[in-house]
Length: 192
Image (cartoon, rainbow, N blue to C red; front, side, top):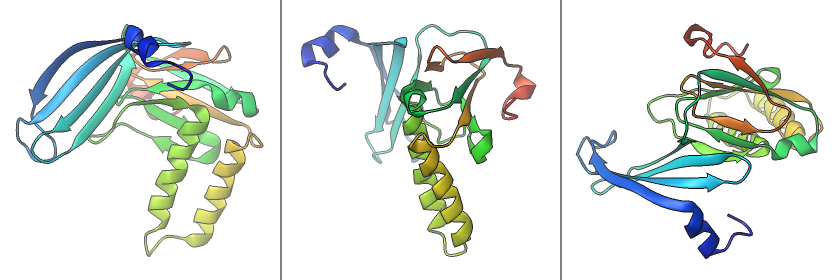
């Protein structure tokens, strides 16, 4: 973490355990997962899971709150540059939606958790857009329009709503502006 010394990080990080499981890539029992408990400022205690297959090199990472809460939808209205700095902890089982930009990040077999800022979430969407737009049959004009919308939002010049849907209660958005709503299983993926 920027500004944190190795000693400070060591004081906040504790290894919980290690185990080998079946790798989703090669199918061997060679994916070694390690769990760490970490105290993140403004967020609280999280469990970091990191894994690497000793056979094929497949990597897996996830993050989740150490204390699970109830299923919930977290809604953050992003109205300027300051809101872009809110921390987002997204577990691999959670969805992120930005309705005004038509953006969705849903869980799936290859889904991995992360911790970043709202701006970092937009950067992930921009990266995915670049991959999708590199296809020979991609609509170049539509790609340029969508890229411009995301970049405008990243610069704090476009308001939008970030919706994090968390059926397990292990993700969060660290902002005093977040509105928490109950989440029913049938509501997941509908964004509101």
